[in-house]
Image 1 (cartoon, each protein chain N blue to C red):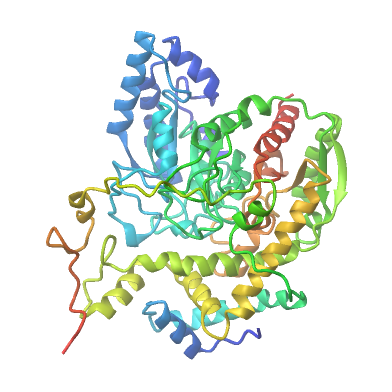
Image 2: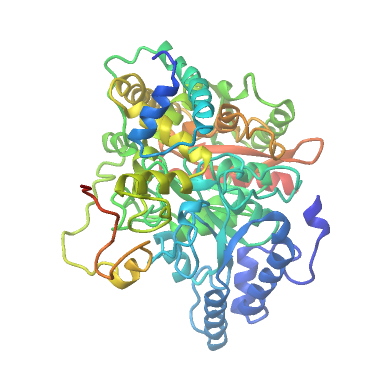
Amino acid sequence: MSANVSIEDVERVAELANLDLAADEKPRMQRDLNAILEYIAQLNELNTSGIEPMAQVSDLLDAGADSGHGVALRADGLRPSLPRAEVMEEAPETDGAFFKTPKVIER
Amino acid sequence: MTETSLTTETLVEKPPTIAELRHGIASGVISAVELAEQYYARIAAHNPLLNVYLALTRKQALEQAESVDHAAANGDPLGPLAGIPIGIKDVLVMQGAPSTAGSAILKNYHPPYDATSVTKLKAAGAVLLGKINCDEFAMGSSNENSAYGPVRNPVDTDRVPGGSSGGSAAAVAANLAVATLGTDTGGSIRQPASFCGVVGVLPTYGRVSRYGLIAFASSLDRVGPFAANVRDAAEILEVIAGADSNDATSSPRPVEHYAAESDKDVKGLRIGIPKEYFAEGLDPEVRTAVESGIDKLKAAGCEIKPISLKHTKYAIPVYYLVATAEASANLARFDGVRYGHRSASATNLSSMYRLSREEGFGPEVKRRILLGTYALSAGYYDAYYKKAQQVRRLLAEEFLTAFAGVDAIVTPTAPTAAFKLGEKTDDPLAMYLADIYTVTASLAGICGVTVPCGATASGLPVGMQVLAAHFGEATAFRVARAVEAAQTT
């Protein structure tokens, strides 16, 4: 993991993240990402082959004293959801029943 | 000491403890309504400078206070926090005011439900004063990333209160609430508590429900209290902790009586002092204050044991990969469709997404989304995200091993005291290093309490971090209480 992020990399990642960076933001982000990734590169000092990745603390607790932690799924029953009218009030554009967006397929 | 010179009359001049207030309210000496009004008067006087509260929920707070006074007059049973004025960090949703998470993208968002921690406080009779400023989406270490302006540290108003829960720490330090809720993903409760000279609690992952917490990094995010003393913080945790069917990662373990536990003697407890937390980069004045705290624990009968946590230096790189990767996924929900800001300049669906996010997110949030997206993208996933998760396991297992030989681990909470506003805003990496002693516990899922243990020559507070094993809150409170008790005698 050598850190050498180009402006094109910044643009590509911004596109993946659905961010439309302003022209003056790109060099700043490039500088910052390179600095941060350079710092992160010290992880290369560690040999981690054979170590299981840990995504959740519950991985660790399940193996130890707190077996069953994080697997407490609730009963699969019917229950009321939030009232539609209250939820729709927060939508930028709605007809009351659906969220409205600009056209998805253009022609 | 700008804040202490600006006193208002009455009950709240000297911060009262929850126990004192509870007794006063139950016996009718203190009116919960008057108490709330006095806190609102203090907020009106000090908020213009400190910028702690983003919104006040006066009407519902006074209604709650009235019902507490009514119950007290009738001799009805009162909740454990009946009438206690509490403020809520703005990343926790609460009905009756906007929940912005410090972001422009949620500027006028009125949540249609309450976070579980908020629901529990209400049920305990707490009077919730309003919503408190923080770094945007809890991303920051100085509270300077809020879209609604920085919070000032009440101890020295030219300095930052820390972050991301800077407002929650400052509110308690300036007595603009008896206690507050904050959230901690990499140090966001502990570091500001240290900077403002108050007590802050990082509960074990799963101890407090995350339901209604606007997500930053789901495997790391925790909800916890700030208070002026250890016992008050323990009382709040006792109320907000517990299993919740709305958060599958919340633990079914019974909640302990933390406040009572905090009073227990520390004699014979084994305290580990990891040398890696006292190495290069630690401010000498902070070191002196923390070492004086350790001496007090020794005097109280604790056994002080030097230990080594040799992977510590890798915690910041691991944290900033794991947290940003999770953030890049969590923040994908802000798309201008269901809630929040939608760009007025959008011409089609794709530009609506991109422009709404570009206009709504601040620079630090974009930086973290980009870093997280980069770390998860094709070709980099194994080198960055997977590697970080592997080292995360090493860090966590190192703590488990250490806790086989000690009951608690004591470290500085932050490498320095509060820094000046603007001092680190141009250097994200320098800002990230403010979390160097706090991210390890976040990654491992263990709990901790930060307690004031002294001050620098210029009077800036210094915090000591007391870490305990998973679900070892009672021990962390006990050790923190011993340090606090030794300070005040």
